[in-house]
Length: 386
Image (cartoon, rainbow, N blue to C red; front, side, top):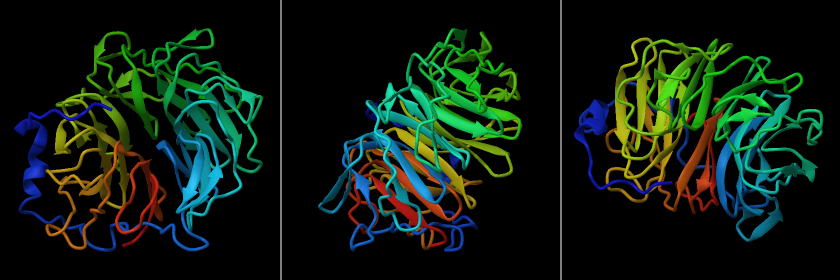
């Protein structure tokens, strides 16, 4: 990830960051925030992490799946071999028997409750030849050898909805079908669907709500020429641009999330923007932006708040890697502005790279030595409510 720029733009800070100095959002109470202290690795049933960097997380079938670049699951001084992909029990963080080693980095995960979809740089999983995209049965833990779309370049983001698997990344085609940086496959047989946003540069993030797909990345046009700077909404069937252009998207978007009612889309931005931000999906206007000291790499909406992960700290506090903001106002919910707040002490580089939630657990992953009180290795599981 890029290091932060030293120049801080007042425009990029946004209205919400200024409000945070004086305002307390209505949602800032224990009933809406996850506990900032995650499950602990201590004891026989303690939570595991990993010995490298995690880039993706997904929750499904009672497990938290973690993908990245690592060789072992770790808990204190206990290690177990796991190469780039592992799973822990959602309720207590204990390592499961799931083992699906890959030969290169895992960068994206998604699940529909039956399958775990895995994307990244790899060409084998469990020794089975697959090209940067595969799926694994949650019931058996085995790679589905009938699902073998040929993706020639890395997959960076995945989302599954109904019978469609949406993927984004560095690629320009799927098999012999041209699909520039974004595509959709049938979950029944892996065939390429008609969805074709035709971006002009790579995409890192994809989110689906209803019939709309949101894409985030380094691109500046969609549909082979329609101006869309780093963020666009497209039709989930055709990939045609829908809705307004989004304003003040300052640089590359690395992750996306959407409000439960679809009114706001949230982005995690790197480069010169280095912010978690919200945009009105009807007007395209930016509603707020909270700037970190370095890249904001992950974002997740849950229970009226937006959780965002980053590296190099926030507002000069170099111990922070994970914060929460009110989803509507963008006010950062950290003591003493809000009580109890959500600002677990962390550290490490590159910090938090991925966040997901299912309403009862918030999971952050990346490379960090601790989160809140416990010492954890790049994986923290937070319980809701506080």
